[in-house]
Length: 364
Image (cartoon, rainbow, N blue to C red; front, side, top):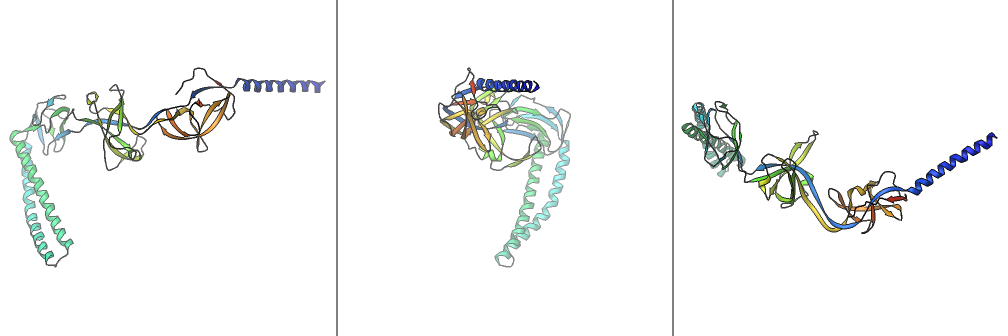
């Protein structure tokens, strides 16, 4: 009796298991699909850029002084030569005396270096000394001469400032920064006012060195910015790719080699100096090629695959991909136009799985 009961329990369990498997196989896995079609695809390099001006100057002095009068404020339009402020240049007199003393000290050294260079030139022509020895004396003479010229220029500038005690704008533009206040002491070399030409704006970005190799001058660029309310496709083009890479530390503290790229924008009226914008630089584009959603493609054992929907079954297909955009992938080999592809296959899906296609499908 006990054996018969045990056999009955086992039979019930087997029937339940078989029924569950049958139900699961019979129902199938719900999938969303899309018909493979042809279209255009474009690949971009994405980065953040900053709006700058090609003509932007920070005005600083090569002496110290006290700001006695500011004649401008941020946002003012100025022309080249306009007086932006006046300074109490009493300190200039001391600076001039210091430079004149330095100049006096250099003159004997220069005269000696000049004599040595002239004598060594004659000796070199006679074959008495090497060309290197002659060049060494010539370089020293030119170095001291350059120092003298720089000091003379600074003295001239200081005397002109001392006479009128004013700071003038070197360019026409708009006052974008004022770093000092009236009554404040300005130290030698510190910036006091910034002027920028807002009619000559551009976007500057730093690309990874490897990515910079993939772009060319005149490549189309799209820009967007939530802060400025911009969403402009083909807004401009690559104007200049700097020839030298520089080291930059990322937000994660990793040193990277980057290349500065300048971007010309067609309509600069929508830009604001100093703002950050998202840039997309076109590297490649292809037309009339097979494209599928990026979510349909997955990697397995180093190869790319998709699932097709055929006769209510999932069919695994290995593919070769080409260009990739934000949400689309070009397929070169492996599937054909009008195949039905499964979008975003889940982990349960495998070769031969029974499927149920969701009705609200989208088409390429």
